[in-house]
Length: 153
Image (cartoon, rainbow, N blue to C red):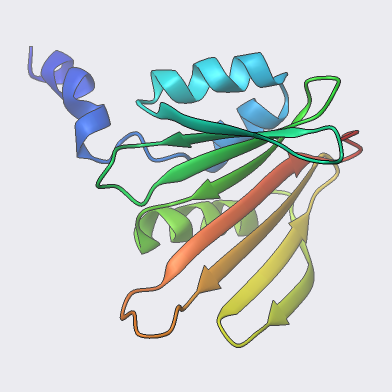
């Protein structure tokens, strides 16, 4: 009974944060699968934007008071690029550590006034992980871009 209660309540206690496995699952599928997948994780549709290059961006958020966001950039053939804003440093670091342990190789790092980014690539995937420090904010923000190599967007 305890395990069932934990499973039912898990989306409300941060367990709905995405993992590297989640990002891979979404990158391997068409956009409609990814949309259903993140909805099952407790994310809600926020808005859609058409982009001049023929793609569209679909925004999903975890809740009005949450900073967690998933943006799917969807191409004409329904492939998708995932941009994920984890709410916590812990979630960001879990994904970063999973990338480092997996078959990914560091291919580039960049540093700007407000961000530090690392790009990793495997045979199948590309990911860019960024730590962002906005002026006048004590906490860092995070952004993870993830997609399948050779994706046509």
